[in-house]
Length: 583
Image (cartoon, rainbow, N blue to C red; front, side, top):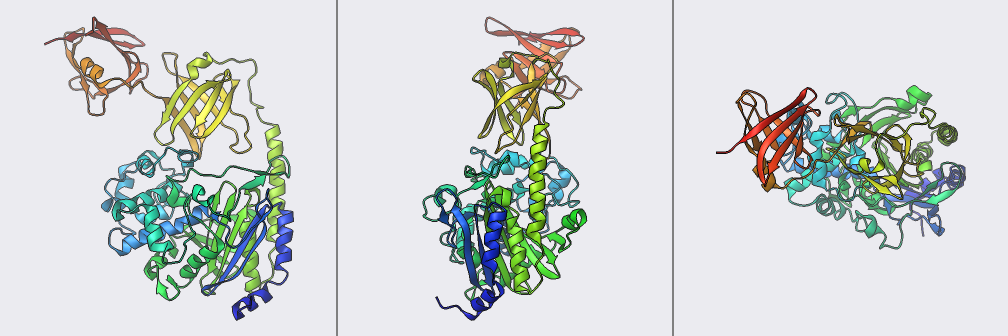
């Protein structure tokens, strides 16, 4: 193939590049990676190194399909921007003006959170990724509805806190306002005009093709490379990370971004949208400079779906993507119209996306090479050794010779959390089993009412602590998850509406007063004393209910020959009987 002038110039600047990439493969024990370079509006370099399938020794090519993970986010931000251009959304007015059904944790957020806040990771709400990770029954609407239970960690716009769920919610908003699913909207408005005909959304679709990446990574305790499962549960959270593409087609995307939204002479993306997504939305700290003294990347800020920073005096816009075994980096220099695509297989060598990106820019800009690989390889090897030593010292705080407070059968059940959903505790092979979505691991007794999973190679170690209520029954599970400690509560028994209707009515107190038991539209009974706030009754066992406000206050309905005769109230100070009044 005859090289163009652009390609010839690039080739000269990339002398010995292949040799250096082969060295990176060896130094980082990397299964494989691909590199693409876009200049002006053309893909002028595309090369794979190592293997797209390490086991089968299949080469990495420019057509290798690859999950780009969070590099999906800019597609979602731009799709939302198209609705802004149509007047259906605004960047900086409360999102509830356009979408009244969205709910946040409190009224302050309800009244102030904007589309830009959601896309710039500045809502103050933490990630809660375990809500969707390995959960295949979750829907996009479920994520949208659960935002109201996500308590903010800091005030709105106070700090940059990365949040995948906000992008999922925006994807659902695109569906609500356009009448098309996020997938349909992005395909029609972005993929098709950019000739991204091989770009898809699911692993199942990818596996039907002939050229695709296979996830491998390195064992924790050795240098062994092993195959890991694909992350396939992307339906619910697709707008934050489901796109699968290749270097050739991502170069079309990069060319449009670099040329004010035009591709092959056609305006595909309105220029105003691109300007909005690159505008600084949230300042990020200079982590590398402040912690390691590496100041090449300076003053990063997040826009919407991408960051900008100064790299050795050159304006850089970029974003990474990561999901089980696959890591990507999309970036370009706006003032130089140079862009770099890097796809890397292997969680242990994810930093190659940065290392290779900076290596390419320094070559193309005529800068001296920064020893990024040496720096990060030193960090990686030290971290691997430190992690190994740390695991060898686990359980030093274990209290010996303790036993669980209950039989194993008493811990079995379904425990619910408003954000994370259902944690199932079962018995399998005479031991407890931890089931959160598709993550299923055995639980062994640690001490008292704490049980731990094994330190799994893929999922790490989970530690759950069971709590009992004042009646002595196991009713809660507490565990550290994502950025905080979460409490899962044993699911209440679901009672038949007909029975609840029968229990509702008027009861007489021992002092001849009256109280009401009311069945409301939420299918829960409420205790109503005149002049007092009502109390919700949570089904406990059979005809016994627990006062939602006070767990040591129980109510038991007494029935005789199918008729409700009385209501007993038990609390630490004693028992009271309220007789049923029949009219």
